[in-house]
Image (tube, rainbow, N blue to C red; front, side):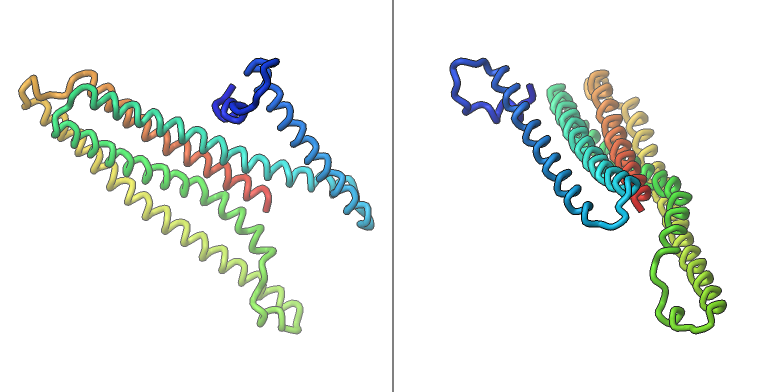
Length: 258
């Protein structure tokens, strides 16, 4: 059983049952409580919808899907938080293992510097990729949303229906184009920043290896240090990649809802 469950039953006094049975009873109680709440909310929904004229099964299905998407949104957030704890834990373990190798001050500072440059290189890379992937989806999403958004009151006040419709269409096109241009500018700026940090990180790595060649043997990084360093850099990359995937999933859910 997880620590959260075991900690909740710690103060339960019952000599007739084992800790395993206590945990099972606690989980069953929580599940029953959730099921009761679910049934209560369903009854409230039935009561309220029974007073709506022309309420159809299609409307009920829409409500069901909306609730499910809300749960999916929360599930992604929870999964992301759980995974980030694991990434943080792995990071802390690798740092500790590196220090156990008794690195000198230069090697400690080198490790910190490489991790900083790797973080900057990775976060700008995933930021650029997110923008690049989002532009087509953002355009389709905006096209739908702009059809529904309010127009300036001066357009709505025009009496001639043909002119009003033509101006409305032109207004939506201008707004969509302006937003698309802003997204492209943001993408290009992110690409320049990504290239800058990639160059910085690669230069630092090259300088490290060149410097290692001229150091006395007893002052070089050990194979264990290098292995731990590689694992820590890979963990930084994996953590940021996972965050970007979660953000992309949340963005997709928001798009589907709207």
